[in-house]
Amino acid sequence: MPTSSARGGHTAPIAISAVGLRKSYGTKKVLDGIDLRIPAGTVFALLGPNGAGKTTTVQILSTLISADGGQAQIAGHDLARSPQRVRAAIGVTGQFSAVDGLITGEENMLLMADLHHLSRAAGRRTAAELLARFDLADAAKKPASTYSGGMKRRLDIAMTLVGNPKIIFLDEPTTGLDPRSRHTMWQIIRELVKGGVTVFLTTQYLDEADQLADRIAVLNDGKIAAEGTAHELKRMIPGGHVRLRFTDPDGYRRAAHALHEATGPAADGFVPVGGARDDAALSLQIPSDGSQRELRSILDWLDAAGIEAAELTVHTPDLDDVFFALTGPRRDNHPAQPAPPAQSGPSARTHSSKDVL
Image (cartoon, rainbow, N blue to C red; front, side, top):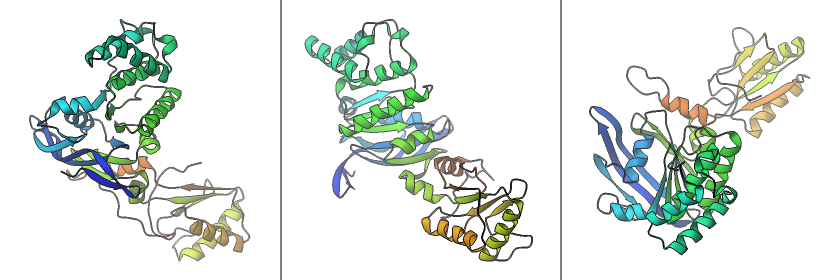
């Protein structure tokens, strides 16, 4: 199985590699032969709707359950033949906190130190360092039951780090947290990766994957529907557009006519292929990839006609669009598929999506 990958102009070791992983519960196929290849020192995000198999994937790769088929290597160790070595190299933070609320934060940390067979002195030193690192030193002597949700998640990750793992599995780590606590958790994850840790992240927050992940995979119906960087995934989905809004009805009509002349004939005013007009809102929606060239062309059209729009907004496909295209409702028992790659030019795409105002 491959053990390295080109990254940033050099060869990086592969932290997690899997081929053909399968898992079923009765007649329900949860994983139907997925492949993964994750370089060390990166954040990999696994997205998917509820029941797609995200948690099952984490449970298999972290040795909590066994796969029905396929093979995997974690930190260079074969998952099936060397599960103990895999466990020694990883840390796992599940969807639900493993913190014991009946004891203090410090006692939770010392319990983990005992489980990792650290000496009393080393355990206390490690606990103190991690509590300080996660801004929990002041609350160390308080029962964990008194902690806020964000504090409990920070303590949970701190406990995971007691064993100094090379790879950390974070299964929906920010679910239920307020926005400030989520951003704190993001910063913690970034700092872990700077220190060389590999993070395998499952999340239902698409902005979280966009912010953190070096690579993203979308899991649907037990298969990897698509994988790539956030930018690569967004480019798979057509639908970028520019929205022009006017306050002057006459200016709106002249703009529609000017753009109609530039993009080709239409039966009733300006309706280019993939475009739309909203007479009530005095707005025009023009297919565009948001590039400087296309924006300049649109503005040139308006300048030539002596028209000024009150507002111009640009929408490019985001991970929401990717997610819905790849995991949307089925037709004829087939999962939704992304549209083919968009062509360039203002008449290349058709998409009705939200404007970014």
